[in-house]
Each structure stands twice: as C-alpha cells, then as structure tokens.
Amino acid sequence: RPGIHLREESRRYYPSGEVTAHLIGFTNVDSQGIEGVEKSFDKWLTGQPGERIVRKDRYGRVIEDISSTDSQAAHNLALSIDERLQALVYRELNNAVAFNTAESGSAVLVDVNTGEVLAMANSPSYNPTNLAGTPKDAMRNRTITDVFEPGSTVKPMVVMTALQRGIVNENTVLNTVPYRINGHEIKDVARYSELTLTGVLQKSSNVGVSKLALAMPSSALVDTYSRFGLGKATNLGLVGERSGLYPQKQRWSDIERATFSFGYGLMVTPLQLARVYATIGSYGIYRPLSITKVDPPVPGERIFPESTVRTVVHMMESVALPGGGGVKAAIKGYRIAIKTGTAKKVGPDGRYINKYIAYTAGVAPASPPRFALVVVINDPQAGKYYGGAVSAPVFGAIMGGVLRTMNIEPDALTTGEKNEFVINQGEGTGGRS
Image 1 (cartoon, rainbow, N blue to C red):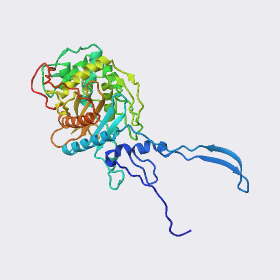
Image 2 (tube, one colour):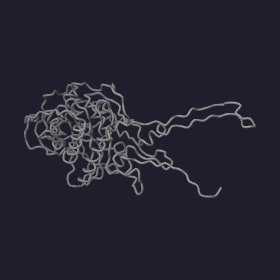
Image 3 (spheres, rainbow, N blue to C red):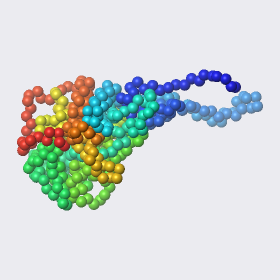
Image 4 (cartoon, helix red, strand yellow):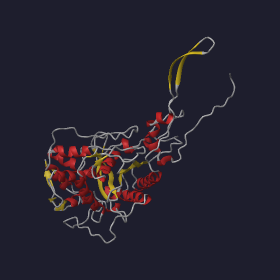
C-alpha cells in the first residue's frame, strides 16, 4: 500500500572509537561484520535463527513435523584486551608516529604466561562510527597484515642456539673485527675488536652473530626461528592475518647464512615477533596467542631449555643499560630485557629502498617476565631512523605505563649498578642498532 511508514533500525556505536578500531572493526548497514572481530566472530555474535518444516492440511492445521533446526542464541564475546593498556599503547604510538613524521606505527602487548593479547594498536587509525572519507589504507590492521624483515630483533635467538649447541659458553669472547664473506664486508655500526656474548647483544654486533651462525649448520637457525613461531600462522582468527615469508631453500651460501643471523632473508608480522618475545619471556615455553579471554593455566610447549633462555634474557638486560643500543627504553625502577633493530624497507619490486623500519622488542620486568611488547615505527622521516633512537623511547613509555598500571613491583637495584658487560669500553652505540 503506498504511503509513509516508519521502520526501526539499529546502529552500532563504538565507544572506544579509533583506539580499538583495527581490532574491533565495524559492521555494514545490515549489522554484518565487515572488518576485525566484528567479521571474524560474526556468527558467534549474531546467532542463527531456528527453522521448522511442517506439513499442513487445507485448513492450515499442522498435521506433520518434517524437520526442525534449533536457533543459536547470540553470544557475548570477551576479548583479552585490557582497555586501560590499549588506550595507553594507542596514545604513545600515535604521539611517536607524529613526533617522527612516520608513515605508520604498530604495537602488540602480550601476557607472557597466557598468550593473551592485552593490547594491539596501529597509527594512523580511523573512526569506526563514522567511516565517511576514511582511506582504505587506514583500515588495515598492520600488526597482522604488514610484513618486514626482523633485523637485529632475531639476535637473541642466535645466541641461544649457539649456547644450546655448545658452540660457545656464557664467558666466550668473540673477535668482532670486520671481515669479508663472498666479497661482502660484514661490519658493525660501533666497532669493537672483541666482545663478550652479552656485548654482542648490547652493541648489536653483526660480526659477532654472523660468526656464531657460520659455526653452525644452516639448518640450526632455520630450526630455532621456526620453533619460536616465525613462518607459522598466528591463528588469532582475525581477517587478513599473514604468516610472513620463511626460507625453504636447502642450499645456503655463507653470506646468506650470515645475513639470516641478523634478520635478513625472512619476513615477519609485528604479531609474530610479539609471539617470539612472549616465548622468550616464558623462558622457552611456546603458547598459542589469543585475542579472547583465556582461562589460565595455558600449559604451552617447551621449545628451548629454560636455563639457556634465562641466560640470554639476562644478557638482553644490558641493551637498556648505559652503553646499550636501547638505553632510551630504560624504565626507572625496573629491569627490562630488550632488543632494538633497524631494517631497510623492501620496495614493490623486491629491492631495498631508502626507507627504514625501526623497532624495539622485549620483555619486562626481567625477573620473571610478565609482558612482551613489540613496537614498530614504519618510515620515520624526522631525521632519526635507528630502532634505538626512534622506537626504544616508545617502548619505555608504553612498558613503564603497563608496569605501573598493573602494579608490578619494581625489581631494579637502587644502587648505581655498574655495567660490566662489555670488554672494550669504547664509545657507546647511542641507539644506532
């Protein structure tokens, strides 16, 4: 019948707006999930109508039940995200992207003991309640869709592998004078003639880790990185998750083995790197990551000897101490174990371009770790681009806020703790790693 009538429609409102936009996603006008959790858990959140098929007589009376399907109720979904921590991570990340005139930034915070993702944020973000004029680029959840070479953030795994295989022990001193492989020079930003294993991590020595790699079969690091989850799906259930790129080759040249030890020749997502560091933080227990609330305990699977991982976590504390490449991440009152990294970006044709990714990954507090955090700043344009200069301060600001919000007891010595890790006390790397 023609005329005017009213129809009631519901609209979604997202109270946390751009803080959780990439994670929660949004629905279309018919309330179907289009992005994020809204899409991945659409059926669970919506429920399913039931149906009953019957035969009726000519008077409309039911004379036979043929079949029936029960309806499925709509469910609530409890995410593992802590709103306070999510807001903190997003705020600091947003500030850092602006401060460094960067293309984007991503960060992931994980509970080391359960594998729960406590915060996952990207900048720039968008307003899911009002999508008008939002560029497609701003909608993707870069923590799961964007891949990059992990660079120096893999170095702790190299040291662990060498220790586990007995190539070196905790007190080994390595010759770190630059040298050549297949016509390529392997050199470090800060030059030292020799370094302890701790010094290799603290100064982020390419020479040091490549010598360890060349003393082992090529399968050694391929196996270790894979055990820590690189090249493997993260299975959070979010749309667009990638598993990165992982080498499948059998034959490795020496230069390929060397560069693999400082994080080239593979691609990872920020989420995969967060899983690596959560596994380091639990001293070698690999747990599946979860975006929904997990009822502890999550047993996980031991993938590396506890004593070896614990030793390397202690070595990683030197990175945030004076003389370390990540001293700008230091948090007053707490010991943290971190690694900074910088990698050149790969262009559309697969060649390197003059743009950089700066990152810092680590765990805190150091005894025993509770949280793993990865901070990635993509293409900083304000002059600095090293991980230690660009992303380390963001790591410190976020993790400091997390430790205080969660009332974690300070674990650092108050005395002027001397840093006796490095043999050759030359000039510091000043964040250049």
